Image 1: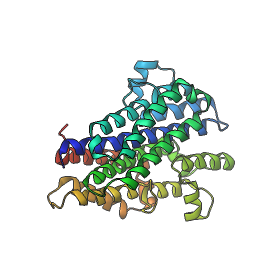
Image 2 (image 1 turned 180 degrees about the horizontal axis):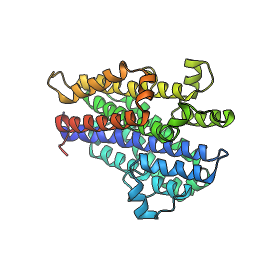
Image 3 (image 1 turned 135 degrees about the vertical axis):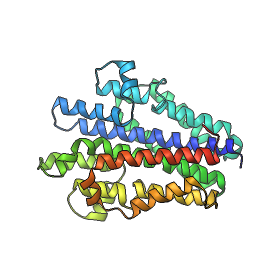
Length: 316
């Protein structure tokens, strides 16, 4: 397959997944901001979201130092100059789909096109301001629809492999960032001190629901929600669709389908990262520092993405 075609497919799926995960991060912050807490704690949550997304300097240039929920949501949803905003991501996904229209089924193209057009109509109609939670659910649903149509209508060939590779590489990156939004601030809390139980339950429930893992947690652990188990579920469970290990398993599976070369640096690095996750234990990760672990993970995922680009796609 042409490297240019592979590049467009890879980034189409990455941008679609990024839009969904941006919606997930905003949703969990919005839900937790509704819980009883001090104004400083609520603002720290929004500042943390910008920091983890590496958008703090760009936000400051656009909106100044005043970090408010409304300004952050506008910046990360509607700001067309922010390349990571939901509008920018879904536009980029649509343009990549348009460039390889001949490699997609009609259903896949129409889903991408309709998603962007409907998004613009909703934003003009004030959907974000009226009900942020419902708007974020809509973004997530359209991403689910895009993946379902892709799996249900496209030929199981290299085109699908690059689509899946982009999806799970982006998901691994964003899941790590989403975990870090909460755990970086709370790491010292759940390693020792006691907190208000009722607040704890709703706070961690919001985190789990943001990655569609609340029911999964109940099924797996059948116990009260404990932060270290939330971390284990979202990092090390291979059967959890949004876990870091689950994502790396999918990346490796699809990499193996597009290359059989033992000299592939992308395959070597992805395999090493998967092995490190596969044989890790959550108590060891927490003992050495979860934030440091996630930061290193993000660096390694970015390196894998760069090597995939060099080996298969258009060089950056």
